[in-house]
Amino acid sequence: MKTLFFDTETSLILAGVFSLNPEYINYENVILDWYMFSASWSWLDQDKIENVKITDFPTAFRRSFYNDYHVIKKLHSVISQADIIVAHNLRKFDWPKFYAKVIEHGLPPIDQPMFVDTLQEYRKFGFTSKKLDSLCRKLELSRKMKLESGLWLPATLGSEYAIDKIAEYNSHDIPPLKELYLTVRPYMTSHPNHNLTSEGKVCPKCGGTNIIRKGYRKRGMAIFPRFLCKSGPTPEWFQGKHAVKRVDYRP
Image (cartoon, rainbow, N blue to C red):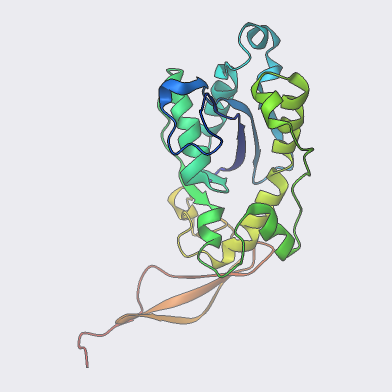
């Protein structure tokens, strides 16, 4: 299955307030709602990282610097090709933000791909911090790009320099995301199954064919054959679909 890694960067929400610590901000006080600066993506089987940002469309940008239609349209076309999409905080940030813009711009609905949210996967384990860069530091993986401070406000107000720097920062999130995914994949228990689109029997997690049968796994009142896939950088275990033995009686 085609697996897409992607990440997005959005602007601030600008609002008029009476206090530095407002208890509530009425939507009527919003001066400029959030919009999407950029999106970056890469396919699992490719090293190339692609990016689209609002400054890539100078005519539209000069007319309205917060009009992210072309960014959303491009990301819409890319995601439409994917069977699986991977992002860090995918379910609570990247996907709902993206899809809100799909609706706002009147783009057609997407046949939703299967999700792998690396943040949710790492929350199943006892890491002190589940932030992408913290996990990469702990696991000695590629690191996020350091971004100079103070860019988000000028970018939100239409600074091309600030937007371009944030877009560059956006693209540098993809290699750490890929490595984080490949690190946790052998430990996942709910990965989308590659056999859904395969004509033969493949590893359900990576789609590899270097598989050997190795022992059995006891589950409830049944015993299943156990398999080991050696196709990826880390061996991955999985069980067969059909039980080799079932018991009819409980003690």
